[in-house]
Amino acid sequence: MSVSSNTTYENDNTINDSHSIMSSVSISNMKIECPECKKELQTRSMFKHIRTLHPEYFASMFKVWKDDDFKELIDESKAFPVEWESKDDFDDTVFTNIWGCLACNSTYTVEANAHKHCKNAKCKKDHIKAMKDILKQEQKNKEKRIKQQSDTRYKYLNRTPDNIFNDTRIIIQHYIKQLTSESIKNDFIKLMNKLNPENNNDEIFSFQYNYDIKLSDNKQEMEKQENYIWKLISTIETTYKDSLNSLYYRSDIISDEEHFKLTKAIRLHNTIPKLSYD
Image (cartoon, rainbow, N blue to C red; front, side, top):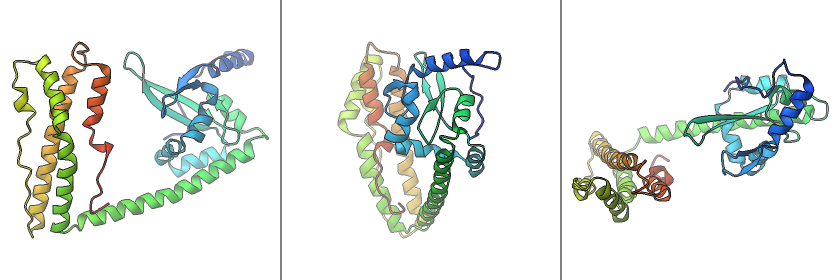
């Protein structure tokens, strides 16, 4: 993540300061949607809102930063940048940029004004201290993440046939059971019968596959069975997703609420089971 930004400013060097201030004040009173809770707030309070009410979301932005980026912010006492993307009414991607002061939580929509504020005597010291604290904590968190990933990879690579067998059984019980539940299948069959009544939708959504696995002392054989189950899961997921895509523009068949409900129902990451290498 780069400290500098290509954001279009509300004002440029050809506009006088009074015009710039008026433009900034006008924008600060506008309402924008929080990227996390989707609540609409005045722009001027968004940085404080995100930082104080959504600390995990705020902290998640640090992961893409390099230490040199943090150090540049600290050395030059620059405002803290926050960027997120959303969709407008035409389903186009819109990028929102704001900058904040870590001393007083003020929000700015003009980068130059934000940097100027953070260099003033009132906030500079506390703003820099807060960024140093963030950098220090993020370095610790990064070390933990690397160690955790390393430990997880080590456990995964060193699983025994028994581990793989038990993991695969958990995957079947958790994911296959979720995706092949009668309620989800019936919902899709009813909708697809309306969209494509000529198709044998009962058969398409029957998912009559062999989900049995057998314990073997051969690790490669167990991995082969595990991969087979994951391929089945992917096939079932794709069937559902293709159906939802074909229904996307058919509001006469499915409501927005029902479409969202089914999309959420087939998301495997909603709940993740604990496996031997976690």
